[in-house]
Structures are given as C-alpha cells and as structure tokens.
Amino acid sequence: MDSGASKAVPLTGDDELLAESVVHAAIPNELFELNELDVLYEDRTSTLWSFINPEGRPSFTPSMLDDFDQWQDIIQHSFGPDKVPLRYLILGSRSPDVFCFGGDLELFQQLIRNNDREALVAYGHRCCRILDRNIRTLEIPMLTVGMVQGSALGGGFEALLSFDYIVAEKQATFGLPEIMFGLYPGMGAHAFLSRKLGSAMADRIIVSNETFTAQQMYDLGIVHHLAEPGDGVNAVREFIKKSDRRHAGLVGSRRAIKEVWKLELAELNRITEMWADTALQLREQDLKVMSRLVSAQGRLAERIAVA
Image 1 (cartoon, rainbow, N blue to C red):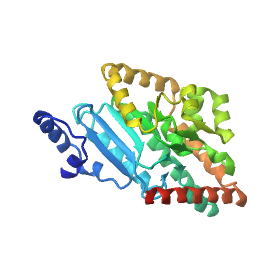
Image 2: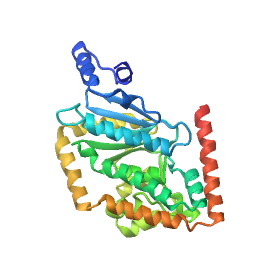
Image 3: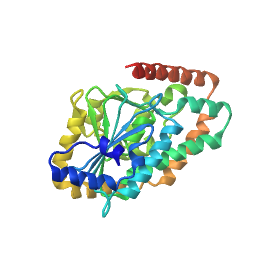
C-alpha cells in the first residue's frame, strides 16, 4: 500500500502510525492513483482531502468525470460505518486561481454542431448523477466541504452547491457565464439556488452574467466560511475542529434540510434535458462566443502548467 501511505497526512507516535497503516490497508490503491483527482486520507480526523488536478483545462471533461465516478464508487464501498472511518469529505483544486471552469465547452461546441442531442443529454445526466450522489453524501454519515481558492464558474459553481458547506478564500469568485452565449447552467443551478435563495434571487444570479465575490456569496448564505487568501486549508481544519463534537447534529441537520428540499435526480435530469434542447438552438455567433471563452480557458491552463 505504498502509494496510499505516501500520500497520507503523516501522524506522530508509533501507535498512531501503526493505526494509520492498518486503515490504509483497507483503502483500495485506486483511490490514490486517479489521473485528475489528488486524494489524501487524514486518519486523525477521519477526513478525505481531494483536489481537482486536471491534465488540461480545469473543466469537467469526460476524463475528469471518469475520475469522479470512480472516486465516488471507491468512497461509497470502502468508507463509512464498519469500514474505514469517514467524517469529512473535502474537495478543493490544485489549479492556481481556479477551482473549476465547469462544463466542457469544447465538447459542447462539437456536439451542438453535430446536432447530437443524445450525447448532450448523456453528459448532463452523468453530471447530475454525480451531484445527486454528493447531495446524499454517498449514503455515509459525513459532512462534505467545498474549498474554493479561485474562480468557480458555471458547472464548477453548480458542483459546489451540492456540498454541505463551502469554505472560500476572500479572493475567490463565483459566476454563471452561460447566458453570455445564449445558454444557461443546466446541471443544478436552478434547483439548488431556488431552494437556497428563492426563485427570484436564483433567476437574478443565473441571468445576470455577473461575477460575485466570496464576500457577496457569504452575505447571501451560499458560502459558509470566509478565509484569508492562502489560508483555505487552515480554515477547513478549523471548521473540522469546531464541528467534531457536534458532528452527529450537523449531519442530521443537513439531512433534514435536504429532506425539505425534496430534490430528486429526476428533477435534475429533466432540467438538463431542457438545457440540451436550448443548446441545440444556439446560433453560430453564440458558438463563437463560446469558442473565445474556451480559448481564454486554454491560455490560462497553459500558464498554470508552466507555473
């Protein structure tokens, strides 16, 4: 289990190290060998730290979705009561200044030009299934935390809305830019924001093409904790420390909120099917705007790779 052990957050003391080794023997190697997700297990707090670590643009490409599918499968089968303890699941990003750009716009252009509704719907359904499983915390009594240290746009913002808590550094930004090329976010924004903020405010955010600061999102109640720039990890650790004694109550409270939401996968899927139908109505000038955005994302990804 060398791969997993090498990525574990080190502990002190022989007894703790031995306990950590036993725990890691129960975690499949595959969890630590994903291509675009960097995963670490911290035994002391029963926390799984995961970081988006893309090979190209920090977007939800099919290859990244492959990793998320496998990540969720392994966690659900290997962690939880009577398995490897898991109380907190954290998702951040290794990309400097970017959490995630969201959907694979390059793929969307290709599918729209090919009039391939089936593939657009399949992509959307796949994203919705991942979000739905995250909402349900993989049926494990744990708290999920999205840690944002940069830009969370489109589907990246939508993905964060499926977490129990969001910790954001003050320089982080949030936005749903799809309206600028005649589309709208189709993988959860309406469902989540309407339930969290009401339909009027949700619509205002979705169609505004406005970039929101972490402070603005905190004031709205979307972000739960603010951190100073560069201090996101410490802020999450502090959240874990303060939450540990009341963990059961927090887990139960989040489950109660989701029960009130009555948000089912079927609703997410219906919205993404409507999104696919709208996407097929985009004009060439809309696709050119999308293309310029893809190019800008690509240039940023290149700078990240060089850095």
